Image (cartoon, rainbow, N blue to C red; front, top):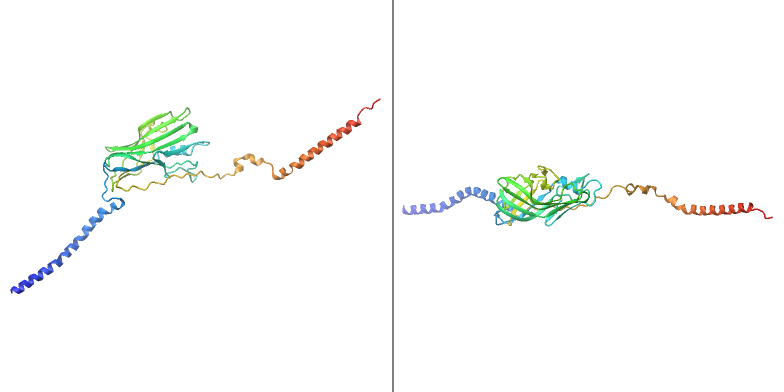
Length: 311
């Protein structure tokens, strides 16, 4: 009996481990699903577990077209406008986004009219609903025939308590005859923004196409009235460990070629002598001189005939 009991115990000890993997296998799917949920979003970032915080908020950009009707006003110009220009410097670039198109041709006057990308400068980040993010760059709109140059520089976004504002340095250089008086407005509250309910994902906070309205006429140097809609900006703020979106393509404006013939552009060309008339011009000149010689000879004969006789 004792041998049987020992043998039974040994069989029980051998069989018991074989049942454990079965229970482990049934528990495996929930464990795997949890891992997939937590790791999949982080595949877009350069550092798994990247979180945006006050210490590492060091990347991002601001893409903003300011106001498209103003870009068209300067970039296309009224009939006869000459010398107009839109340029971006000091960290700003002109993109190919939202360009002015006329008759199917973008930038019809050869002046870049796309939205602007301002590079990151600095940030003071507390949370997705409370931060300040500054960007770098200057865009100059010049309209010599209307006697002004407008400078938009170094925009920055601040948000707190559910409200958001876009600030910038605005300077209007104007001479008599300009549509507005000269102005220099550093750090002016330029636009009211409607902030989205966004949170940082993998260290990246994005505000896409945020509705914006002009705060006051003075903020836009008197060109538009308060409450006028401005182009919606897209803002990104990111941790230095995050992957940011690819920058939009820069503008490459080409002056469109003229489709009208030179004869129509210069009407007087229609009245130029034909080749046949030009080839006979020398013969006519010789005939004229021959006639003059014959006329003089005739006059000499007449004078000789009527010369009075001497007595």
